[in-house]
Image (cartoon, rainbow, N blue to C red; front, side):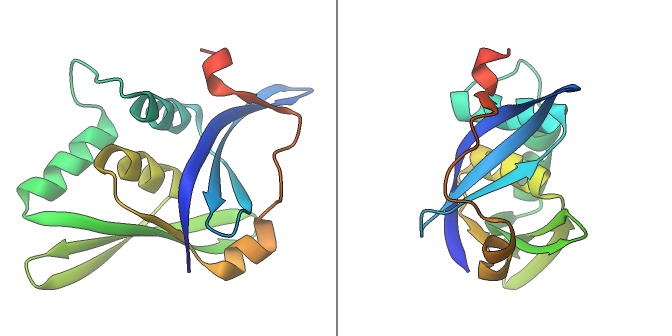
Length: 145
């Protein structure tokens, strides 16, 4: 597994408009682009910018629920890629137990940027989908909102 960080949230230009993409940069320098929904893109982007909504959004709620249940998200792991779909899991510590929860990468990343927990990517996922540089069709989401 390699440690990764959010490199940015982008919109990819296409003939049909734009598709939201979150890009992770692994510790070896490779970039992992993951196509996500617009709601998740905005959630990740607003958390990176430090925006605090007047009421908890879904990922804020999830963080609060985990905390109130005496849990702590230890890390998120993007661990598989099957038929162009990425898979992830939350690794939660609760007392002396470790609980793993299946999750979409976009939701995991949105949670991770809020609570500042580490993001890991399995090497095999990077080997299959990692790239060396961002395509020039990507536009920073901040230019779109």
